[in-house]
Image 1 (cartoon, rainbow, N blue to C red):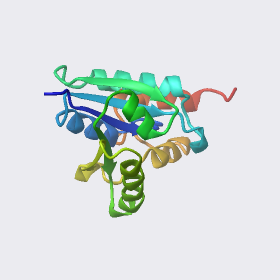
Image 2: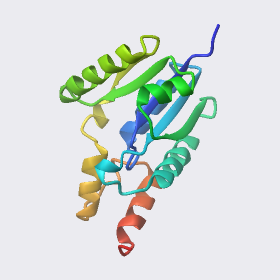
Image 3: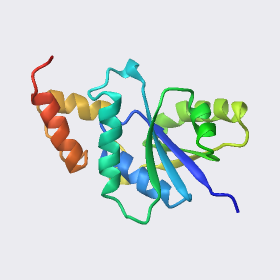
Length: 167
């Protein structure tokens, strides 16, 4: 039987507890999970691409050793990235009903471009449904406590980034 490879894409700026939850659950649905960190400079990232890849790698390293998870950057169409790594599945996390419309449309486009790659939706755990990287950055930039929204390594690096003078 062929290895089941899944891709979980995102910008992960910063990686949140919700992302880690989806990563750990998705990894149990496939033989190998590739977390694809997207360039997406349009979102005004707090961390550059290399920093985001390193943050996700460091946080994923703390998960169960039995999970086969890789972290890679990508700057192409998601479907092209999925093809390039031999994935047969794209994993998308849903926080709320409001996410569904966008994700439904994206899944349809991806399906049209490559019917051999399925999109699988995972609902966020109830205690992570309201967490978004955008809100984490906003709260952190305004001096709020984001410790319950992000893993400890990410918290420390986010605090350090925001404390550093702008270059």
